[in-house]
Image 1 (cartoon, rainbow, N blue to C red):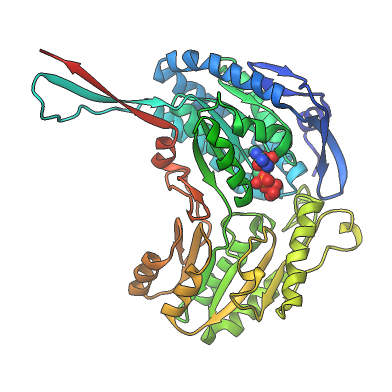
Image 2: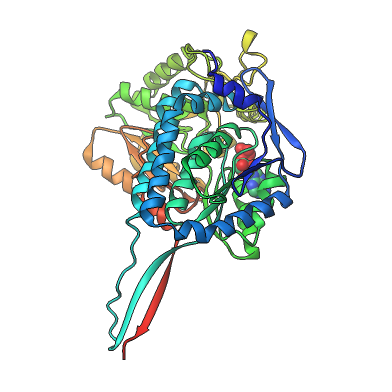
Amino acid sequence: MQLLDPVNRFVAADRGGLIGGEWVPGSGGTIDVENPATGTILTSVANMTATDVDAAVDAARRALPVWRGLPPTERAQLMWRLGDLIAERADELAQLDALDNGKTVGDALAVDLPLTIEIFRYYAGWVTKIEGRQLPISIPDFHAYTRREPMGVVGAIVPWNFPLLMCAYKLGPALAAGNTVVLKPAEQTPLSALRLGELIIEAGFPPGVVNIITGDGPTTGAPLAAHTGVDKVSFTGDYQTGRKILDASQGNLKRVTLELGGKSPNIVFPDAQLEAAVDGAFGSVFFNQGQCCIAGSRLFAHEAIADELVERLVAKAEGIVLGSGLDDRTDMGPLVSAVQLDRVLGHVERARQDGATVLTGGERGEGTLAAGHFVRPTVVTDVDSSMPIMNDEVFGPVVAVSRFTDEADVVERANDIRFGLAAGIWTTDVRRTHRVAAALQAGTVWVNTYGMFDVAAPYGGYKMSGYGRELGEESLDAYLQSKTVWVNLA
Ligand code: ADP
């Protein structure tokens, strides 16, 4: 696939971050942005420092009265216009995500882009529908009501697995609620976020409503998370980083939303439609190279169907064509970085040492793939719940298959973990469906499907998978606070 001219121009351009409506170079050094399919350097971006964070937070604070002062219909129109611009540039944005993340352009166009566009449109619709309430107080001669007001300045820190989409997860509800934003994309995948900054200017947002700062976690993310001028931080990433974000929030007790990791159980009962379950298990853990918080990385297969399920899963895994995300023939791209490659292969190696069997995969792509960060889709069996492979988030194309015979037992094992982001169940028994869905400790349960997302459906974690929900009306709530107003009518 040829890169589009605007993509080539954009990647080659010198850029800094977007602060107060201007592109500024940043006061620190730069960081290289790599093409994970080839290991070559695409470009570099500013590694912005605490000084730049200060400037971005100042710009966001100055823009607050401007943004809140616009009539809701105008704010809604700007957000809708941004959705339209993203739709017009979908091919470009998909190529940018493929370039620095490694995902296929096809996946980006099928999943990342449509949901990104829908998020801006959905939350544009909410702008004109955020209402307070008149309160039925029992004290005579007083009138009391609530106003729903923005938090203020939002720091949005996003990961590299869905580079553009994760920006939308934060920006949509934050802007609809009347906040201004300082957005930090992941250092591995800043390109689509920066292009989004150009579209935000083109759409006509007032300067400073959205500021975009690039850089790594310690240099740029940490000062943003700790900044006392930031009223709320919304973070998606590793749970260990989530803990740091929480620690950093203490200076001004800022509000925090955390969408962290998972180790999601995907349970196939003997009465499941096996073909659908195989496809679901496959997609749940190999989509996006397994670099999904919701990856169904613990596959529980009932003894009665386990052999056939595993055999078919292995056959499908071995049929996957690895390659550049920009090649139409590619089913699966590379992992995002060498660090991630080492991490994933380390998990598989550890599982081997623990006595697990690697049925397929567990190794790097060879030949023309050797320069990139490719890992073959991996199926591991003979695992038990004490092994790290059954407890730690791998964030790669690795599924650990465990067998069960009893429903209550598998539910207990599924829940016996510190995470609780998502779960899948495959069954044709309607009573079991609701029984197990109720019993699983997870923010989302998919039944006879996996990985469904819709902007109207809230998403987030139980336990150490996070605080709060994203998408839907719940996400809007997380960017609003309530003020009660008492008026003496006497
Ligand atoms: P990963 O380890 O997979 O890269 P992270 O949770 O470290 O996942 O990264 C998610 C986002 O958090 C990225 O934008 C990263 O730069 C940022 N980040 C990393 N460390 C910190 C930190 N200490 N404070 C704030 N942001 C951070």
